[in-house]
Length: 263
Length: 263
Image (tube, rainbow over all chains, first blue to last red; front, side):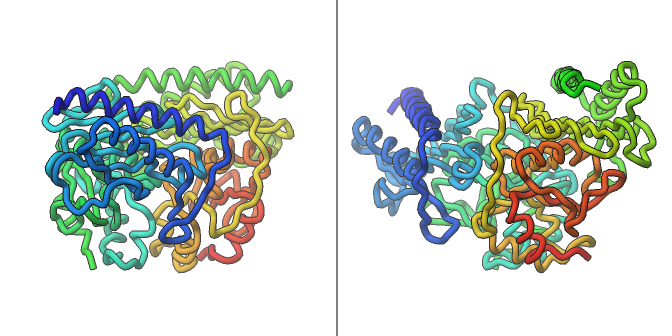
């Protein structure tokens, strides 16, 4: 498979899907809850995933799709080509703000990320990366990230992880909060990863993300020298939910060592 | 004083100041700390405030300026015309992200807000409002806000207010966090107020803001039916720092009654 050809194809699908999403903003959304009351999904999340699957299956019959809305394949391994897709990452923002949401897509071959995309739909800005090919914000090549100190870091972290919760000891998170320059929370993992990759945040973490939330970002992060692992400093599980951190190098180790203690 | 003429004049100053800020992004910033290590100011914050003052003093000799960087007047009352200005609201974002910062300006006459502006510099979007004249996002008139339930609310609140702090009992904030649909933190009070006014957030609160952070937003908020008070449900102090909440009507009362208890 020619990587450049696959890249062009994926970008064209993303742009067409985004056009459809934008058009849908003038119609009434159908909103449902999934696993719990605030885990929302709309008809547009579903239609967008189905749009990708329809095209990919027609053009690459042997490729499999691991999508948030479950219309793709039943994925138990990453053999061959697998597209990990979140059709709308930041669905709550999509519903409430009509902005600050992204299409997140990673294409993996035998478990290795070869192409990654985060498309901020309303900003019309495409972040992309390819294995050993660098990372780009639209046509602009992104520089490698340098390190940052914890004291001068601005970190993406949701407030729910600094209060008592089932995943992480909150005392360390409070200490982190009291040490860093500031925290931000934007409501879309893909957009927060894109902020780290472009140097607008120094790190971003979450106690619970799914493979499709991070797959695209992983490919891009690697190309700019950002470090992405789970919060136990292990390789990320791309078949199931896992904790997550992406960070500037150096800062990554310090955050995990001194502040984050999983339960 | 003709309100329309003053409005045109203020908008033109804001646009010129923004142009200068954008131009400055290609030069190296001079960054200093103010009251504490993470309270940052740059040469561009200072130059922008001085730009406003120079023009206002030349064109409206009797008007006074209450600015974040302290180059304006020593304001002890709001008699006559007072311009409350934050030349760059979200200085940390300005430094780290080169986006998500705003020029925030409110013009008050004898203590009454008559004109308000929040200009998201990098988005090039101007939110404006005039007393009894409605609120606009660029040329688009904003609709009145309707209420929202706490359970379906997305609330702007920084993580530092949900952990033990000197201003608010954090237990209520934790309860709030566990009740609402989600929280966001964007790092600029003016931009978070603009999100409430345009319906992208249902409420935004902070335990400590200064008059120039909120003055522009107050004028705009009133025009769309948003309620803005301090967290003791009193009129905001526009001469000194105060706690702050701006919210959809109904939701406002519920948040203050059931979740927020100041120390």
